[in-house]
Length: 288
Length: 288
Image (cartoon, rainbow over all chains, first blue to last red):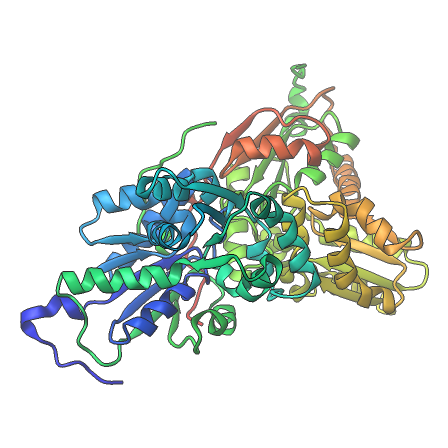
């Protein structure tokens, strides 16, 4: 590992990028950031003790997102990436408003790519129940171009299928057909994969949807946005090889085993962290 | 609602039974307890903010189980039922050892029923990854009769299927065939449904497995054990209609909507509770 020669005039550039997700899926985002910006150091947190977020309430996800973010801020990050679509959909506004570091979510980059790449103006979005219920992709897409039509559907079984490694064959194809037929019937020409687990289903989805549907993976888009933002603020890390730390709240061995498939290389240096033991926000919940 | 005339000589009988589960599935246990013992009051806690437990580590599940149990103890329960198979498999021993109320799990009653009902001595068990990894059913069955053969397999997609309401048709049948064919090939004549979600899949499982396989639901068995235990200790509640309180850590509306299917009647009186905010156990985790 190359130890960077710290340029004391630009200390900020050497600080790490923080990335959090509800679990392992955010490694697809880390992978694209590492591919595009190999000199950047990364601190990753995956909340594997409380995964999934996508089937839980806005209030609970916001509370978890605050705990995860403040844990990463404790590592001196220069930029926070909310790799979890659900947390991006429901907590990005308040994190952006109250934190002193720039915060990037995965919704806006994915929406922008959909707007740029759709030819017929009919864009499909798939995600968790919470992401779809939030209508965050619709708002982002129509904020860019109000004439576009957006067709969304939740695919709650896709995350368990990916977690099981059941990413091709009869069962996932049947489930995908059932979820996606209404979107095909609506005439979409592009489909935003609005959950960090879904990029692993790309080959299966391409088979089910046929060659005419453009599959949009927000991980690539957000990595491009990270680069633009750090370049603009003169905070690109001049190191040759960034340092990476991975924290999970449970099951580090499983994270190591499965993580390779998401990260595209072995996941080295995993530790356990439980952010809720360090930081206790004021209760956000009311009675029903 | 009938207010019981408190018999001051037997105050303990009027105290509620505490039941906890990782989420909604434990309502199948509450249902059987209510059917068999309509005079008993029940305090139920479903940890819907941290569900599922079955894919998490022993240490995390033990920590969650302690928090859930101490929350229920705060309600003055006379008996604790661990309705969650995963928590029963990994935490029952220590809860039993350290708590002052009797603690019943769902493993032993299910195992006992399997031993009593199997004719050929080949018993199948299905459950979550954590339950199967714990080998708790094997140990319980072979503790009763070491000559019996136990064949276990985890069915990680069954819980998401039930949560989605996808309990019959081509997709669950295909998945069930894939999971259960090895057990059929092993010649089992009875199958223990080692997860509180699975009773809702009974009709589908009966179709896939055929009429010769006896499906064993631990919910009925544990209700019988609750009755025996309270009868022996002279703590059966003489009321005509027990009072029921349901607490969840997230999404009370969803619990109300889905819960009816599990409980067999409307779930009335749901509140939010977050036991981890009241009770903080000493950290149980090491580095990997």
